[in-house]
Image 1 (spheres, rainbow, N blue to C red):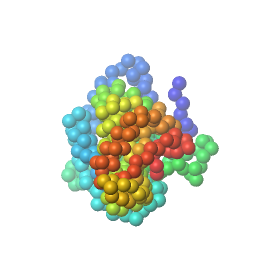
Image 2 (image 1 turned 90 degrees about the vertical axis):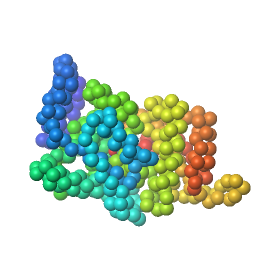
Image 3 (image 1 turned 120 degrees about the vertical axis):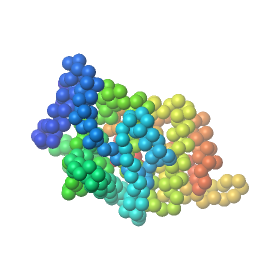
Image 4 (image 1 turned 120 degrees about the horizontal axis):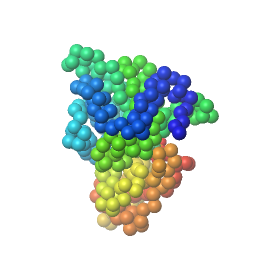
Length: 328
Ligand code: XMP
């Protein structure tokens, strides 16, 4: 019942991925225990697995601490955290074009991975050979339309940071075991592999991070800081209302405009933020989420009262299509 696109079956790399995937699927169907398969895999890689988490300065409120804690405490994986904030933000200074932002970010990630690999080489004396990325099928479809789909590169919707931005001269070989799967399928696989539920249910977050949620130049003023505070209030309110798991993705967007307001009898000329929440099966299409009025009212008040520099909150009520989920 599985169907594969010619792009997959006509390339050696695609066939290799397919082989591994079929091995997993058949193994499960045939009643093999995934733990046994996995144990063998872990033994095969052993202490040659080196995880790296890159803080690109475009993460959400306390994201670095939270992700590191999950990796270490719940997944028991050895992770090195690289703070590359300056490196990313200096490259993004003055850049307003969404595609340009995505390409710059994709390229910087690879520079960091290459440098990390060199570090490993110095430490362990052996050259690391592979980079494992969590690319999903929609990333591939939206970045580079498969042959036969009727779309061409001029129809690229957006270059996902992990696909369209990769430099041709990258030294590491790429492995993308999830490249043929949609998010809901990855979550199902995660369940089989006993990945903690809280980790599986996390809303997706794009690799280019807040760079595609601050419209325009991300380094301008304190846009990133404002967005982090607004986003945290929005997400925390969603969790408190018990609706986090009913939503595919929720986030705030920083708009590059100011509006006039009145706060404490004073005229203000401050920032406008948008709230976006959608439901979806696989991210390819989405419907906007219909919050209760009371919820929206409370959130807007909390944001304007709690975040200095914001005097207006609007809600995005478009589906995908015609919009995409992210604004850039
Ligand atoms: P769009 O905005 O294209 O997003 O409707 C669909 C889903 O993909 C996520 N997204 C990305 N994820 N790298 C990623 O890892 C990217 O460059 C990227 N762009 C979008 C988005 O958050 C949504 O879940």
